[in-house]
Length: 382
Ligand SMILES: Cc1ncc(COP(=O)(O)O)c(C=O)c1O
Image (cartoon, rainbow, N blue to C red):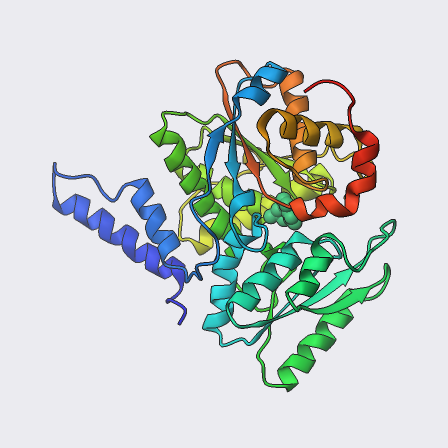
C-alpha cells in the first residue's frame, strides 16, 4: 500500500531530528542532509525495474579531442529495461504506484518513436499489467510499423492506438481509459514522460526518481574524489531535469544543472521544470528554495525542431562513438551532446571544471534515422 502522505512523514522526521539535537545539548548533529534525503526517497513505494547504480565513468578521450575540462558520463542508458534509458528510474516509482492502486493496465501517450512508451510497455509487462499506448505521428514523420521503438512496442505486446497528426489524442486517451474502467481493470493513466501530475499520478514520481539519481551520482563522484561542477543532459517533458535540480538544491547546490532542449523553447522548458521541481521538493517534504535562477534550459541547439537531425547532432554522435565507444541517440542525447560540445568550444567551462554528461538513453531511435545518419557521416577525424 501507499505510505502515508510524504510531507507529513518528513515533517515528523525533521521534528524528530530537531528535538534530538536539542536534547543532546553540545552533542551529536541532527540527521544530516543525505540521511534526510534518503529517508524522503525511501518513503515512496518502488518496483525494482531499473538496474542501479548505473556506471559513472570519465570520458578522457572525448575531453582530449575537444580540449575541454574533465568530462564524465553517467550511463543511464544502461538502466537495463528493454534497452534502458532514463524512464526506467521513473517507472520504478510510477508503476509501483500503479500496483499499489490495484491497476491491471497502464494508459499513456507519446510520439510514435517514444522511448517513454517503449519502456512503459516493458515495465508494465514485467509487473503483470497491460500497456496501452496512444502514439501520434509528427507532421513530417514517416512511420515504419517495424522500426525502432515502435517495433519494440509491438514485440512487448502493447495495445497500440496510432494517431495521425491533428487527431484528437485526449479524446482517444479518454475513450480507452473508459473502456478499461468499464472492464474493471482500474487503468493507471500517466502523462507523457511521467513528468506532470494528473491522471492517476498525484505526486511527481518521475522527478522524485531523478532527485534520487542525482544523489546516486553524487555518491559515486565523491567516492572517486570528483567535485562535479556542471551536469548537462537532454531535457524534454521536464521531470529528469526537475529531479536533478531538487537533488542539487538539497545536496550540492554548487552543481549547475544545464538542460539542453530537445525541441521546446527555453522559456516554456524553464517554466515547466521549475513548476515540477517545486512540486517535487514539496512532495518529498524538503524545505528548499528553488528559484528561476536554479533552472537552465538552453534551446540554442534545437535546430529545425524536435526529432530533426542536423550536422551538430551527427557530429556529436560520431565523435562520442569514435572516441569513447558510446552510442547516443538522434533525438535527445545526440542533441544534448552537441550542446555540450558547443559549450566547451565556446569556453563556457574552465579547465578545472568537472562536467558530467547524463546519458539518458534513446538508442533504439538510431535505426529509424539510419539514412540521415549515413548521409552525415564524417569521412575523416576520429
Ligand atoms: C532518451 C531521452 N533522453 C531525455 C529525455 C528527456 O527527459 P524528460 O522527458 O524527463 O525531460 C527523454 C524523454 O523522452 C528521452 O527519451
